[in-house]
Image 1 (cartoon, rainbow, N blue to C red):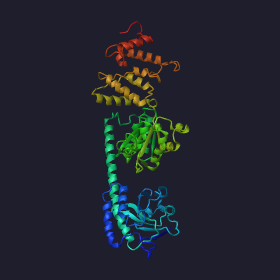
Image 2: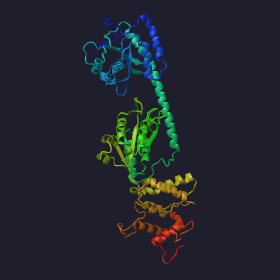
Image 3: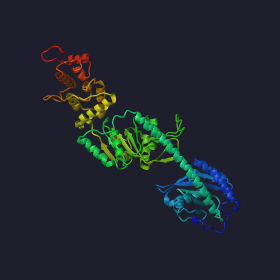
Image 4: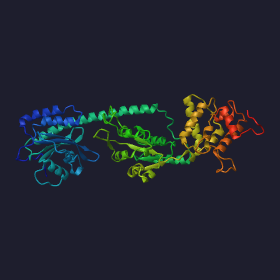
Amino acid sequence: MNVVAADSALSSSPVGGLVQSPPAERANVLLAVAQAVAAHADLGALLRDLAASLGDHLPPGYISFALLDVASHTGKLQFLEPVGRAAPPHRDDTPTELPANESPTAHVWDTQKPLWLDATAGGDGRFPILQAAYIKQGVKAACFVPLSTPRRKLGAMAFASYRPIVPAPGDVDFAMQVGRLVALAVEGALTRQELQRANERLAAEKLYLEEEIRIDRRSDEVVGQSAALQEVLQQIEVVAPTDSAVLITGETGTGKELIARAIHRLSRRSDRTFVKLNCAAIPTGLLESELFGHEKGAFTGAVERRVGRFELADGGTLFLDEVGDIPAELQPKLLRVLQEQEFERLGSAKTLRVNVRLIAATHRNLAKMVREGKFREDLYYRLHVFPVHLPPLRDRREDIPELVRHFVHFYSRRFGKKIDTIPAEALRALEQYPWPGNVRELQHLIERAVILSPGPELRVPLSELVVSPVESAVVPPAGASSRSWTLKDSERELIRRTLEECNWVVGGPQGAAARLGLKRTTLLSRMKKLGIQRPGSSRVE
């Protein structure tokens, strides 16, 4: 394929020039083109109307345009339309994306000059992929002109002919004028599409943020001064300014979302949206739509277009909680969007590009799941760029008093109560409890305690800790064997100590029943069952 500069017109034409109409009529043709491509929002419809207006003025072949991906500098074919009563080429014979060094679109975009390709002679190797495609299609010649406006460079438009033509005087200038008109129309269509996407995203973001406000936000700050927690905070200070993926691991209830929000606040994306999605809370069949969105009619029930979480988080941070619950069939698509930052909505073939920082969290052992074949290894390593492990609450017991005071203040203000005192024995019991539900369990217990407290002293329902099936709530007394110490022993010891502190008064506002968060009759029943009696007496008050 010989490549000839289009502005150096050849002296003869074996079959004729590119434009079949005489020079005197070309002004009317340009007017028809301008009217055909004006005010289009759909690029496919724009090209169809353009082909209809030029169909009688071009040799049999097709016209197409490709937009340049600035990031990769590759030309991507957008649409192709036959002209001159020709049949369109087979789709498999048409390359849709060409690398920069083999792309006429990239060449025209760089030089901003037209390019004429003569496919009737032997090629010089500059565009081998396109040359092979033209041979299959039967294309003999093609003219590429830049699609550019005063504001931006878009790509290139091509006129391909099945006849072996060469440019006649005025052909290339005519093609350039058509290219300028089409460029303005394409820019307008792209601008309208961008505005539509922006409006959809803003509407979805508004709904999302309104939902976030309605959701009961417990707290947005990390509380604690333990060495284990401070190590975590140092890690997030290091990784937050980067755009690297973060994988937060830890038991349920340790505050993984809180850490994710802290990373977002410390990042360069803090002025953009923090979007979250719990992958375990969405049915498998709907998870793909939640992540990537869908077009109207993409599936039963898709009555309107929906923006997905990746599109909603564009420019910001996406937090995927319980990422280990993502089904295997969806993992390749998630890997692609993490690597390429591009995806398609369900029901759409259009590729959308996003700029999203991903933070994932899980309580599962992903490395073990990879070994068992339940999680993709490549996705695991893509998520595991910067791991952060949150210690369970039992490994940072020194933070419990501060957490208790924090939650007491929070819920007292919410419920309009004034609680000034937290009993020392209650704090000791809370510090000794193993907290299988971690900070979330402590938070819910303090919320109930604030609700149950009628006065300024916090009444913690410590009995709820005793009946936990995980571990005992009370440390065995000195000399007791940890192996022989049972849950029943823990309950007996807690009730006995509480009765001693209340001077063995069971009922009343200052009695042991109220302090334990039990009814008087319930406590008496448990005392009888456990054989607890006041020393030197056979009855209790």
